[in-house]
Length: 176
Image (cartoon, rainbow, N blue to C red; front, side):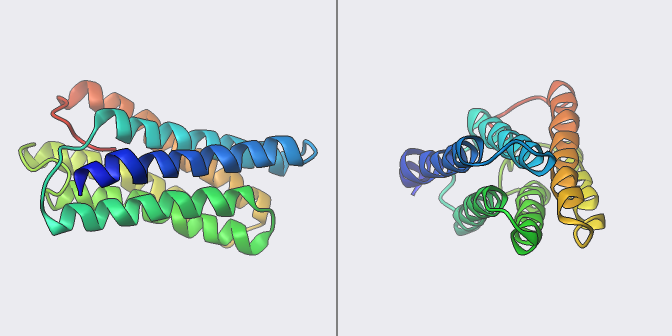
């Protein structure tokens, strides 16, 4: 299963994010909404890259592959919904971004991503993802352009906090 995820699922998800990014970049006229969507897609790619580069320790547990599968689906859904224009898709993207952070937080809290890491460190990484959930959830039902910019703010905040924590929390093949 590990090879399936690392050699097929993760590259496919990365391609999905890239496709959405370039579809928006090439196919639409520049506007505030388009800039927000492109920035969100770029940040999703960075978040995915951070999780991929840090490479979660492979496990043969069902919980690991279940959460990793949901994580991959959430990233693909966020990329597709962000790439598409419209109110309904911005709400779908909000749910998917919240799912990305939620699944990542659950993986840390329940020792799925990095079972050897001390619980205090795992809880800090989970809390970092919780910041993104709060930012995106608070604005989920507002104007579509504002929702898109909240995705930018939520993902950027999580990436900044994770970057700070990764310097504080030693890396032992942990996820995003």
